[in-house]
Length: 139
Image (cartoon, rainbow, N blue to C red; front, side):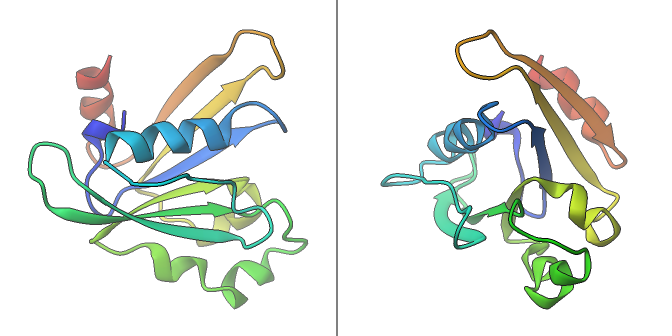
């Protein structure tokens, strides 16, 4: 999937603890050529990496957020989540539910069902823009 992402894309990662949200983000990072390990930003809330868009070689930031520890929706504004929604960055957000009112409508939702050693089911939901068309290309 990472090969099909573009600057300005926002992807919500939904799933239980241990579902594989961070592993999914790592796969995106690998596709974008991110060097070094990508770890869960649970305690720092956000990690930023440098990669490049597939096919163009254009440098792009990969911003990986984990909002699990937030208690109230107002905290989303305080920590500046919206500052990550820029054209030169791809933003992946784990536990996005608390930030629903702050997220752009134009995004892709990825829901990962299952955890532990069980098989996973991944559901992609297009939210506006050209995501439906892009999902067809990815299939």
